Image (tube, rainbow, N blue to C red; front, side, top):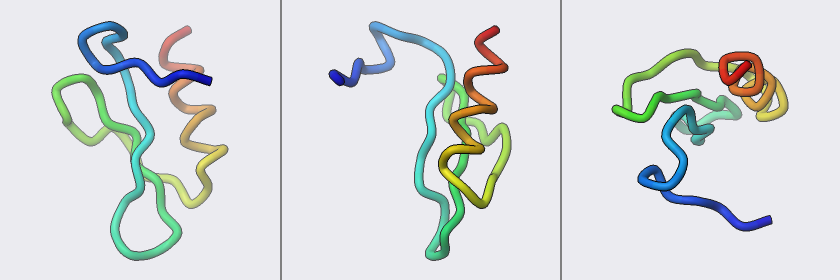
Length: 51
């Protein structure tokens, strides 16, 4: 799967958060939306936010 940069697809991103096993969801401006323990949970948050 090809990743698109923020200019092509505005919205939310999943990024590694801190040193542990945490994952962050950030918006296009880089603001933190939420932190989850599992990457799959972060991806589900993004899916629901996109509607």
